[in-house]
Image 1 (tube, rainbow, N blue to C red):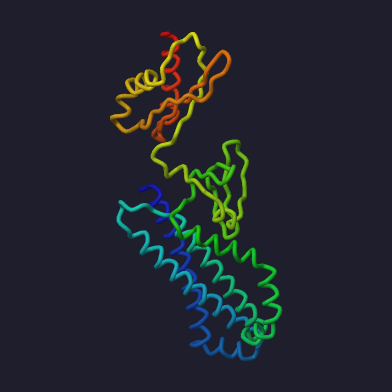
Image 2: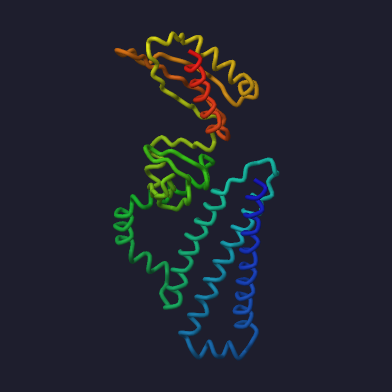
Length: 291
């Protein structure tokens, strides 16, 4: 958590330097046009250049305000106490909102550069805009759902999740989809609408994971379910006290012609799952060998 917080602080420091650079450029353009007569005269003689200058001021001014709001929000967030979990999705969501607002500012600045009045232009395209909104309804829903995912603490970048039949590590969360990388190396892109519409299991947030093992035993080996369970409880006694293993159960699953099948289940601590699974197999092998 300390490493993650330091990394985020480093990123925010870089963005802060970029913000200062944009602020300096904005002040130079603004004060130059206000205080230097030569520049004023030059802009008045070339209306097209004056429009471009005005568009650049609007673009930089809007971008500076958006960046300032984002920097302040990120600064307040990163100043949380160290024992709180750093939710990287929160900063990701802020970044995407900033990108959307910057895109709107860029479009308006482009209109100003060509002497197009934004309000009149948007009013004239009301019908077209309504048609576009209907056609892009699914994309808009995806974007809204993407922002909901980013601003909730259900899962974060780097978490291992299970969505339907897909299990993998979250590599990226965008406004349209969630990208997960499976164990086989393949990446799966899942739309945000689907992520919020189905059951999602965050495997990284579980303290324990259930382990099931089916075992066939011949009839000539005289076992009893309670005896097997007692044997496992004794074998995992230390781990049970340390809460690394819990809920050991032995059940009869099927009775066939020559064998019967039992199911052994237990809950293992996530960070020791493979080790505990190996111990379970060894305990069962020892039990069979003894008989």
